[in-house]
Amino acid sequence: MLRTPLLAAARSPRARTLVEQFPPTRAMVRRFVAGDYLDQAVSVTAELVGSGRRISLDHLGEDTVDAAQAAATAAAYEELLGALAETGLAGSAEVSVKLSAVGQSLARDGEKVALDNARRICEAAAAAGTTVTLDMEDHTTTDSTLAVARELRADFPWLGVVLQAYLHRTEADCADLATAGSRVRLCKGAYQEPASVAYQAKAEVDRAYARCLRTLMRGDGYPMVASHDPRLIRIAGQLAEWTGRKPESFEYQMLYGIRPEEQQRLVDTGATLRVYLPYGAEWYGYFMRRLAERPANLAFFLRALATR
Ligand code: FDA
Image 1 (spheres, rainbow, N blue to C red):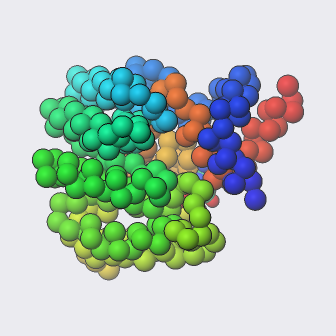
Image 2: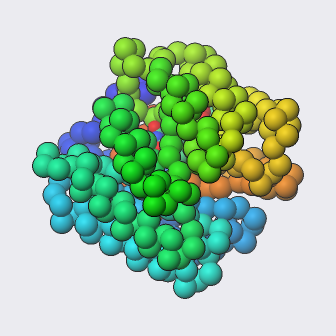
């Protein structure tokens, strides 16, 4: 019930001003975001790597309004990848990129600007000795993101891409991408989507996720199981067993700050576990999507408001 208004607020400049100026927001944001700055991201990465986790770092930025801002985001990723190489963390930490942050939504040549900037980031990742995964945003961008991914994979075959199980199209996309060398991060999907393109009921999304996962696990690619859902994590383990996958031929992925004990439990079983770790000053959209996923997060936030 609260998901729709929260996701609408994620796109509202007025709500953004209100939430950003509310002092307790900061403490809550720090549960999900490493910090505003690169050195904070590197230090949280080092700490998590020390506990056996792998990392995918996201430099937060959405709604890029001009080419200069898109280029600045690409430069921030280059700096991040340089820092990962310098600190010896590139073997355990990759980066995740939202194409909207590097220009995809610009009215003029958006896809081309995003492709050029993403290419810069892939080149920096190759130099650092790590990989890149493209995040997936709302359904109007899916074709464009997959087209950019196809083009980049010609030069960077290790490039990963996110697919969202709630979209009706995704089972077919999983079948297309379950090929040798491909890396697919399967998530449920975090945006407000119409019934014409996406399953609406949680049970339907969960069933679609399990079907997509089966396709990926049976295929020849590298499945990345991005979910905190205990049932789906169990199913992933069973599918891996039935398809004869070893711990290094697929991985579990979770968001920073969510179910940390389960993250550690998976690491302790010998599984590969990667944490998606965002950092940067543009945390608003990311934070609101995390609130929308779980009413308890919102309750916590509202309690802080009431006790002020
Ligand atoms: P579900 O929402 O059913 O949650 C299962 C359980 O996990 C909950 O009962 C709770 O215990 C815990 N949990 C889940 N969310 C929580 C939260 N916010 N706070 C506290 N506890 C929570 N989406 C997208 O559209 N595009 C993308 O590119 C990505 N990328 C991405 C990368 C990675 C590594 C992950 C893990 C997720 C994404 N997502 C995403 C987000 C994804 O689509 C989805 O919204 C969330 O992962 C929540 O879905 P679950 O599969 O965890 O199940």
